[in-house]
Image 1: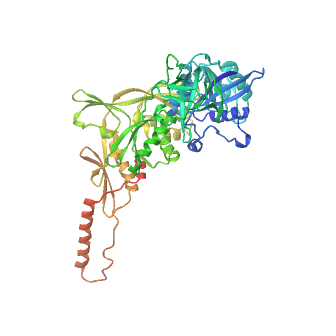
Image 2: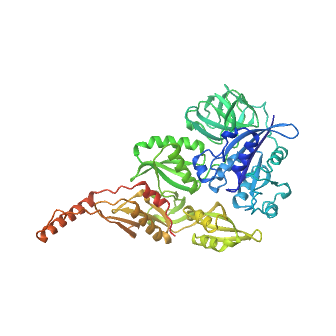
Length: 597
């Protein structure tokens, strides 16, 4: 049987999941009564937000017009910049890519970024113009952009409407005609790349593989080349929306293996699977190491749930290879984990998946980036946790990561976007008019400024039309300060942040105001303070609850009342000395979502 492996790549919201739905519907691999929109978006959070987070592989049989039968393996990939690592893994298991472009929006930032990822892997790219049924569709303009911006042949671009199913037959024919078959040797020893995994509570780790050489079947003994772990295969099969068991997986194909793997740590995405009896000579290149940009600490609400949280993170990492974590501890919150993420949306998704899929009650601290610090003695250290930040007197210089941000926007919103970028300490390096309506802005700006609310505000001021893509470019000098938050005079280490010194006052003022609203009132007055070193730069006060001690006085001399009030005052003073303030989870979330505007 002929095999074709391809992925669908595009900017966010250009119709990848809808096109995947039409391909699956056309192949009739799911009954109409079981079919639902966004069928490959299996997580609740994907459906609620209308975005793809996990790449999903599907095998569909197709009979071409000339009667030839094909096995088409395709992957629907995410479009958001935070999940570009997911896209790079999907691309490495394919020979071709459908580059989807919205007929109403044209070429966007992630369209370019994903195309370059595909070109690096040497994939055959088929441009596809989607949403041609929309009233705002401008097909001639999009074709000019394909020629000019992407350097592809616009005459080869296919016109489809994923929503209405227009042009799907022509798309199938183009896939089998233009995407090359995999170069594989079935007689050679087994050599397969692990491109994804997930955990099944009944069957253990389900390993997603792309076979480059050899074959794998039930009962075969396999070996993971990174650690030498060996297992006997219990089941092999294809992805047909659900897992579809078969007798054999052949070279060039994509499928899954189940081998009763209960030790989660034995499986690594990017590892090579081979035959234990007849191993291959060398491992496959795998994937580039993921570099997290955003760091945050994660703690269980109840310290007794630490081991359960650790197990949940191990299982989640199987399904999300870009998650990085190590052990951490806090005086306020106990034992937890320091986690690395690819962006703030990635952090939010991990938080929701831990809560929904693993029933974990957790707290995240405010996110930070990795700074490079040079001490006066000449020593260089990397700091991503405010708790590890050295005393200011010991620091010679500090560097922070800068990004090269690419923003493609209609010219109408140019002024507002430039104001936003300047406010975020961005320096414009280029401005290119792509055509009479669209402008590309290139900015150098600190990654820390993009973390909190940049993407939301960009979408808001451009009415959703501006697109954003970035890559970390360099480290540049920074004016840093460690902002401590004090409750009742005691610093709470989990609320500390590393901030840009000139904006520390604004950040401290907003955090204190948010905490004042979130922390429950006590029987004594609670000061909430923001401090840099020993200097207090912001303060809010949580007023005490007042018990009416005069209620039992029905008259008499004023000295009786004064005596009771003085007694109450002394009691409150003593209570303040020994009283502890409990921080609710909402207080940490309020700090996480702090905006200084």
